[in-house]
Image (tube, rainbow over all chains, first blue to last red; front, side, top):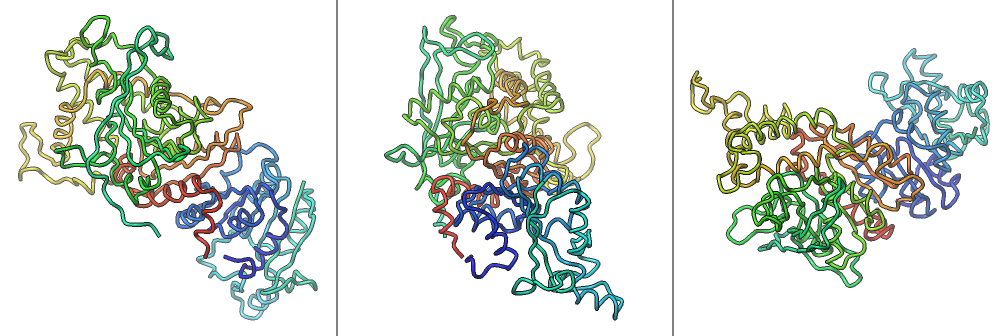
Amino acid sequence: MRYDSLRLDYRIIYEIIKPGSRVLDLGCGNGDLLYLLARDKNAKVQGIELSDEAIYQCVKKGLSVFNSDIESGLVEYPEQSFDYVILNQSMQEVTKVDFIIHEALRVGEKVIVGFPNFANYAARLQLFFHGRAPMTKALPHYWYDTPNVRCLSISDFHEFCKEKKVRVLKAYYLGEKKQILFCPNLFALNAVFLLTR
Amino acid sequence: MSKKEESLGIVETKYFTFAEPPYEMPLEFGGKLGPITMAYETYGELNSDKSNALLILHALSADAHAAGYHVGDKDPGWWDAMIGPGKAFDTEKHFVICSNVIGGCKGSTGPYSIDPMTGSPYALNFPGITIADIVHAQRRLIDHLGIKKLLCVVGGSMGGMQVLQWVASYPEMVRSAIPIATTLKHSPQQIALNEVARQSIMSDPSWRDGNYYGYGQPERGLALARMIGHITFMSDKSMEEKFSRRRKNGNYSFNFAADFEVEGYLRYKGDAFVKRFDANSYLYITKAIDYFDLSGGKLIAAGAKLDTRFLIISFKSDWLYPSYQSQDIVRQLKIRRVDATYCELRSTYGHDAFLVELEEMRDIIRHFLDKTFNGYEVLRIYEI
């Protein structure tokens, strides 16, 4: 696993995190990102992941991981236990989004949230012209097998942060290969937000 | 990646005696014990800086014979699939120690041992012991072997309690800990099951208030206690798979013989146990387990920084030591920000899983130990 073969969202998160940081990844998958952070940035990393298969991959990489769901994974951590809490492509899969974001902000100084943009133009066109539940590069699932339980756009999340008084330090808007600068709510497939209290 | 697994071949149990009077070992509940003999086995070689030692701790009825074969035996030690050249606890790399427990009957000082004050077996004059006492005695053994820091302390069930007690009592000596299918404290359900087992032994007239040495074991009581134990080690599903409703001999007998295979199995296990385990040891050790309680911050002292790495393993179908108890351990470690990994493994074998469902556990432990032994160097080994 090398940096230049990394997914764009991983690369952005990788760049955000400062060397030597304490990092908690909620829904860390097979641990590719944490592995690079531990190896190259000397980060002290911890993952939480529900899938058995992914857990084995993490342990094989030498990572410390908890086999648990995200919702019950944070309660015990004291405040500010981590420099960064990562919620990449996992926030939209939990029902209690508000609770998770606030718990993440409690245990971490900064929170990195990555999610697919449901208002991408391709999704809009499919819905408008075909009347079908949208499927895009960022939303690759059929309506009946998607793990996503929350459907949100970039604008929705900005609005959410404003309403919940969460500070957005920076927002990155991602296309397939590069970042989107123009009209992200229409053109971005994914977004990565850097949040703090 | 991993080399071929081999057997350790012939091994033997060793003994270490200490705490000769007047230097008896003080016990947690007051009183003292000495002299103390500890039975143990070792496999592999201790390296020059003594940094490759693993301590294996066993469950209630097991012993120091964890791997390899004793001369004349056809079965290997109780965790042979895990310990040996090329195995998860690789004796090519590591010096593996398996220590017995005081209070037991497998070569270490217990109620069956001769009380130097009276010249006859201790029986119920044996002092009450705890998991902490067991661990303090093990520490003396580790000192005797010249080891200052253990690379890993590992065990399942009661062995897992000893692992946790090692961390609580001697955190600076434990570089990594693997408690498997265990708990921070015994629950009322677990105490209740132990109490039924004890009552079964003590209500057998042959128990003679513990003074049965020279007369023979309270066989019925001890066998019954073990039958209860075996039910708790299995799961509903594993019993269905193993026995279903299969009958031993055709029709139902209506004479209270063992009609079903499951009955025959339990009777067989009970009877076999009587030949290998001392009834008073069963009483003492189940009490030590029931007294075990490292909940509420007793695992790690307040304000202490713990450098021990943890790997906690539980099994989905284990109802004797359910996963929530392992998650309680994880919770304590999170509170203290201790480096830890927790895996809940799929298995239908119930509590027995840690002795039989070995493949995934073996891989996970192997990788965890590599990381602990080699640090982040190990990450490069798995470079993709």
